[in-house]
Image (cartoon, rainbow, N blue to C red; front, side):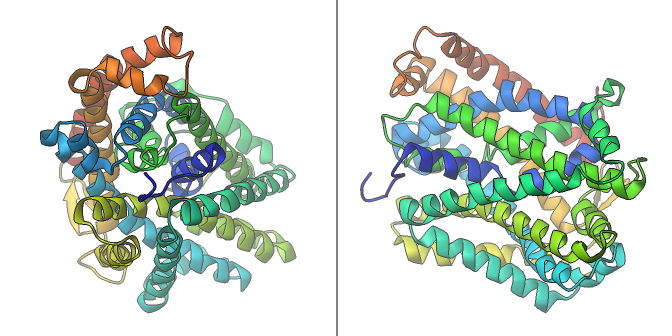
Length: 463
């Protein structure tokens, strides 16, 4: 354990794991998914998945990591199940793919700090003109990846933990300040009603699939990040309570993000909420237009928002990079610093097609591929997100839960979860964990995986 490093405190682990969960998925992804999912109805489904399915899978991933003190692939081997290492490797692949396009979006957010500071509040045309400036946008992405690599190269306690302890409180304070400001604007309450008063008639297959994908993506499940972080956790740590706090932190920050953004949309739309379903462009197109209506304070508010977005992105890119780095250190015996820069460079190169796919290259842009029963042209970035986020993550979560309950066996999982939690055995939480990991998660996630693949790639909606 000493050679690999570890978290120096409970707070450090929770801050780092919560930072892994909190990121663009909360502040960029969650609001536009809520907007496209019809508002509060999406929020209800999302919360269901977070607490009923994701929490047990999260605790299981952390437990496997702590038991083995290994990366996601090595963990299955260390438990004596070499044939299951493919599950961990699949998770590592998902993390690499996600970081490859995540870093592109983080680079946009970094660049938009300067766009806002200079008062450039244009809509879609400005965003389109921005994304095709490949040298500039590529430089922003390279700088963001280099920052991520620097943090990870400093080690677990000296880099990841220290960064999380600084970034997470700063992020929360900045977000709360933006919420307070948003709520003072005209028609802010129309945004709040859209966000918090559910219309359950809007729940359909698409909402369910999207909410499940968003929950797994935002909580960093199914990709081995929490197995990796768990491998650095002290045996005295209460995994169940830590997983609960991480889930609450993730959901809480996603909730705050909605409270920050939907009042702004209510203000801009005059209460009609037009633009709430703006898709991924919500952050980079709709919000800058809103900041442009705020007069002299607009550049300041816009700059602060994108600084905030970059802080959130960094807490996640750090965890995403740590997963393949841990694999390189454990399995390939590469020194940490060398592994960090090699892996970061490879992932940046893998992300170049995503960088080119927003107007610069026709091949990687909207017509890169067509799926969903031949009806939707899809760019490279969205295609990779569909593969990694919407498909591999739920499959990985399903297989990890099935493995823990039926291959490694529930009593071994219980023993690991009871370490640091003397009241765990015989408790309601133990009974629920056994049910959720043994039956609920594998069944529901396997069904949702199949339904999501059919819906996303073939346009077949069974429910």
